[in-house]
Image (cartoon, rainbow, N blue to C red):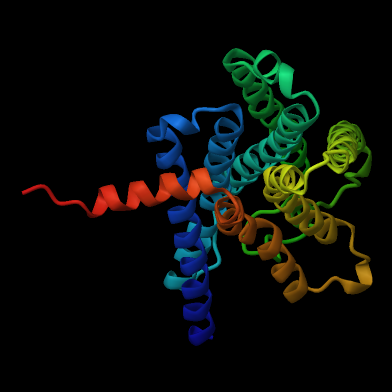
Length: 294
């Protein structure tokens, strides 16, 4: 239905522009705000770049298909979309793990913060997140597209998603997937345990702070990151671990939007709401853009 195609295009365009604007403002504010050149904002800069990349990998193609009244994507573009999405999405998860370590050191080891999170260490940790995401994407993409696909060519999703592609396979892909899935599961579970243990120690340390103002400041430092991690993990877990009885094409579409489209648009809002330094930098940036020299 043409009306639904236009509605789909309009909704995706609104969310995409919100993600583009929010993440671009954070990137520019942190690039020009010298007081924001700290490990926390360096990692937030990387997070914004990854958010922009992940949403740009899938949403523009879906919007273009709606306008052109088509659902087609070439085999090579589908493979590229799978690789880029997995690369950026995995790297974002690993980066969120590193950001949990940053918050842990800032609250539980404040005297060692400059030593443990120097500029060189931060670059190495960010590079490790990007590199591990790249390795994860290479393994999954190579494994998925080495399997012969002979059960039609219809992917029941608005982007090329590995579970939907594997449904088109005419061979038993389970054995070939075991090694790759085991590797990814170990990384994902290890990162999740690390985040949980970090926040257990963070909350234990915060509750020991005698002053209410100190506790409030410490919680303010952690809540945005915790909210972003919770949104990221909960939507992904629901999408991939929900029982088959709850699965349907329309439901899968809604869930995919929740974990793929919503977080990149919401993350800048979450981080800027309770962050006075970032809000001040964004305010100065907006005022600078409004200034017209005579």
